[in-house]
Amino acid sequence: MKGRTNQPLTILIDWELRTHPKVLELIEQGHQVDTIPNSPDLILSKKAWRWDEKYLDMSIKAARKVKKGVKE
Image (cartoon, rainbow, N blue to C red; front, side, top):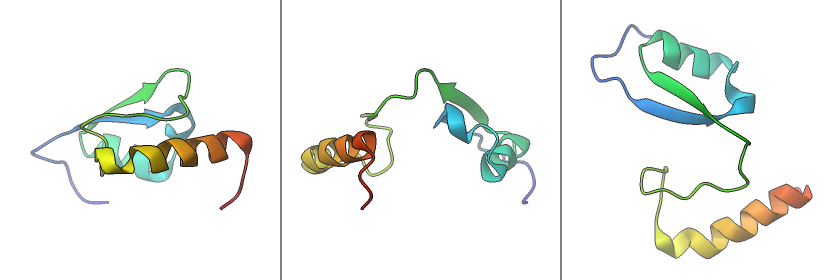
């Protein structure tokens, strides 16, 4: 693990990831990590990694597959 950050981020994560070792490292480094209530099927945000409206249809389809339990 690297040391503390001088540029902490606010990061939202699914509830299930709260005890993941990498998430715990982020917290130790000084980032603010909050959980998303009710674990949504899809999160759309301009802050989301790789947000681009051209990927919206693909994101919806992928979220539906995951919700149905379809493996890629």
